[in-house]
Length: 165
Image: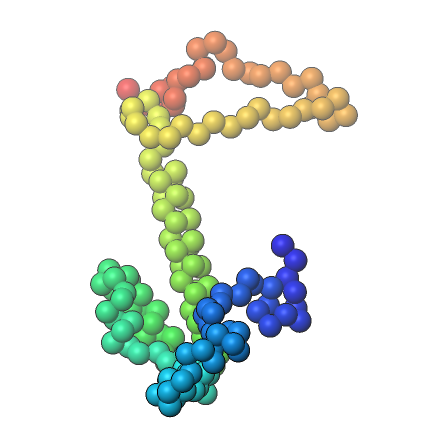
């Protein structure tokens, strides 16, 4: 989709909130009384936003946000409330990226811990098995013709040959 930079809607399809009232003849049909004219004038004034909008109302945000989400967001919210004077308008973006960074870091640590301490060896039935491929050896390599030193009993032992039993 090509975005039109110079359009009034920025390339997004406009949503007609005026309905039939956009045409002058339709507006004038129903503008017979001063009350109807005052209503239309007030409606047009209401379409303009105040300079301080959008307004953040903490009570509404608290009402609409899940308590669990508020709980896990609390630490970073408090940190970035203090950093708001330093970061300025970039605060929401930095806060978003910081949260995603910590989630990625925690996931990486969890995966590394799992693979380090939960190896699928002969003592366990469950767990992920991790296989490594053979080393690729090409004719120009000094180790070419590489031949495996494994014997038939070395396959699928899952570490049993190193057990103290």
